Length: 430
Image (tube, rainbow, N blue to C red):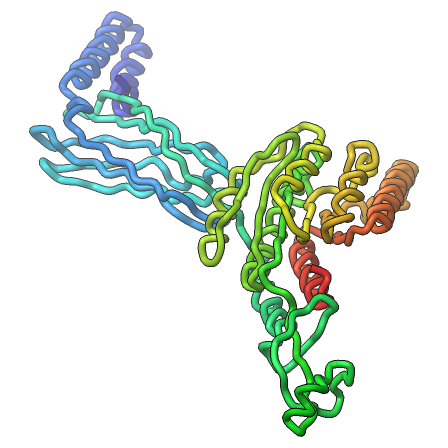
């Protein structure tokens, strides 16, 4: 049961004047009468069993995009039903107006829409559906909360998608499908064509030229059907916020763009999220199924406040890869990497695979390092500069072990990693 504002107004209209007139007997009689009318009104209100309820929630939506949850009410009782409904969601679901009043005639059906603009990636859950049905006097009514467990999966934003067309154009040039034809040390033979001024004489096919009585050169294209293994670190360092989002979100953006580019290049992509155990994975999907599967898998990946298990990650990669591959470690280059096993894992992987270590940089460190206004700023600047020097030392150590290092701000990491992939592919190092 619940009471409406009309009950409070009715009680005030009668009780306040009588109290002011110092006649408490009439005042209490008025209050009791008002409460009695409210109880009677609640008893006469329709029951929730006379209302058909159906809730429809989209299965998924990308972060930042708009969607909506729909609740349908059908009047199955013997008369008109008035009341209100509250469609509850957790705060990160970004629910807009979720309280709706209704006045439904006999056998009528109404739909009520709650707009949703999620602010966090992952599974967003609904709360109970609360229904209030007014009595005929509108003084009180019945209230009931219907347990409900709807789930809206919020996929990664993939804002770096805007960089994909320009990288695909570069890929076509590297792949020999545009006017520019590039060759790398590990490229595959593509075709023969007539020699033109400017061609590398080392590419002349002398046997074919002798048979055709014209000078022919070999054209090459980068090797296809390579293996690209992407490991997204979800350990404690991925929880650090850079700007308005955790580091993990920038790593996921980079993984999505690289996967889309590699899939267009004809390479096979595997992606796992790992800290001390495998948290999510996208394996075996190719073609148009790859990106939806990858978005679904990484949507639920969240930072975990544990130390990374790099020996365990090394065993996982070695078990999954049986031939030379591009291994991309999306992690945080932190001085603790020398102690937690990152350097040892890179050294072992570099013996057989091409390794790339990608890390997002914090723009606040540069601001702290440049501040010199007071003593506190000087201490902060010294600490920030010390951290940057230690990070650079670790990056240099990883390069010496054979890894390519990619570092960038949150909005720059994804395109920079894609450019590194294209450079390695053009050089035939995959």
